[in-house]
Image (cartoon, rainbow, N blue to C red; front, side, top):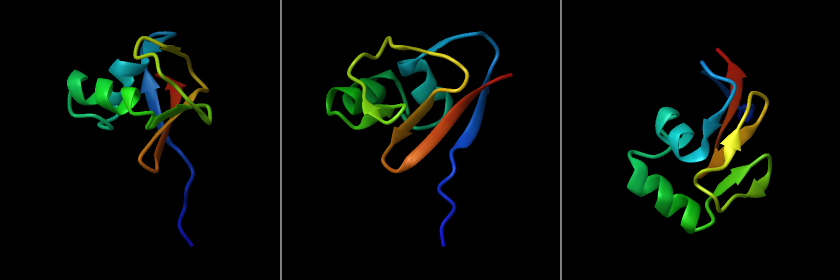
Length: 75
């Protein structure tokens, strides 16, 4: 059985933008790839497809891309 619990990703501030988070979590190599993932509907925030790269994320939010999920925590 595989463990599908999200990996915790601590952030310093109270908020991070989706495009930044994708790069920080190594879910996207750069901003161009992050934009492509979002534009193609491959990114989910809290279980719903997100289409805004500038979406503000806060501790407790989860982000999923290609079967990988991270949960934002306060660092």
